[in-house]
Length: 113
Length: 116
Image 1: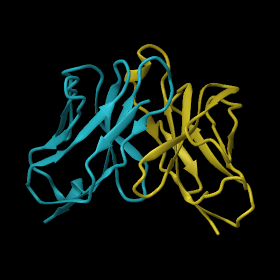
Image 2 (image 1 turned 30 degrees about the horizontal axis):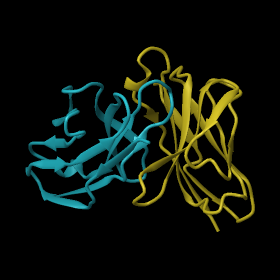
Image 3 (image 1 turned 90 degrees about the horizontal axis):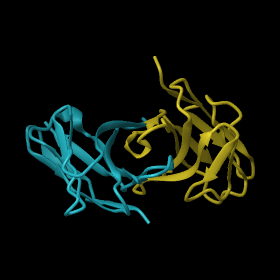
């Protein structure tokens, strides 16, 4: 079956530091990959996505590249802000049907001023 | 504005009672989903529906039931058979025509259910 593994948190960084959150996946076929962000007490918001190998998703300074050879979709940002503090989820959706997303367990990011 | 609404935001029930969580969307999406979120566990799929009057079990359907009588609505009932019902419940929706796997899911704000 499908699975997503992402780095354990919490990850604590200082403002303006470089961010990497690792995500690797196991899936059959050619899944689409997503990063979602969740602020305290709220639902999930889509941050970015990539639908085929070598695609780069980007949004609000965050980037992630779909690497089929390493089955990875690492999230990066060059300079984080306090407002980036949240929980980040890597997810995949398999090809073929309208079934649900498979999520990683989430990484809690804390940015200190 | 289009979106997904879930009500109420907080819900408290006594053990042994069934409780129904509401989910409504005005995005004109065919597919709707229910997930459960527990601390440190990520999200797990409970049920999903691709079309009115049809739904499928997800990974953790035991103790839950759903209905899909209207395209806009997908209520979830947490029954007394669910052993650990206290959790944060999230509803989502998605398109289903075309390149389905590339479509993201849109999430509601969630309902936090506490059963004592």
